[in-house]
Amino acid sequence: SRTQTRDILELDMWNPPILAKNLFIWFSPGQAVLIQSANASNWYYLFPLSLTIGLQLRVVSTWYEALVKDKQVLFGQMYNEYNYTYVHPRLNVIKCDKVTAT
Image 1 (cartoon, rainbow, N blue to C red):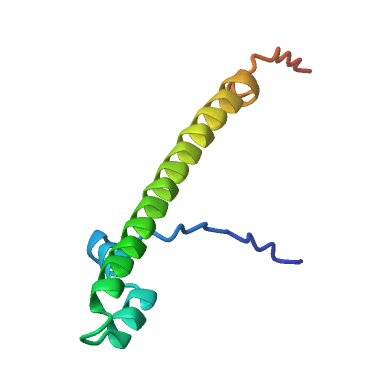
Image 2 (tube, rainbow, N blue to C red):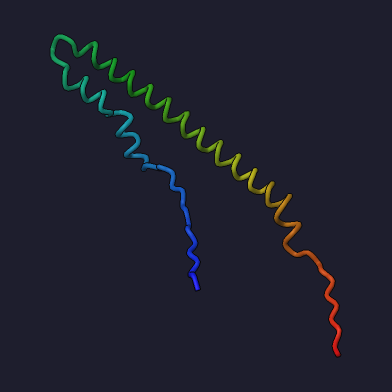
């Protein structure tokens, strides 16, 4: 006989620690390039530009976290509604069982 295998898929969302996320936001590769190229004559242009990049990354990160949270809430509500509407009414259906003995 054939053995049946069940494939179990697990979705794992990227959820970095707060320290790693903040380190990436405030010291991103673009900011590292700007800081590396700064010298005595242009640092006052590049430092505010580096801060602006950090602020933009922080805003995008906050928006993404809000989007993920909203998607999780919507999925949870949809899952509960599906279970309530389609799954739970069919779980314990009372059936008539008539047996005759001879």
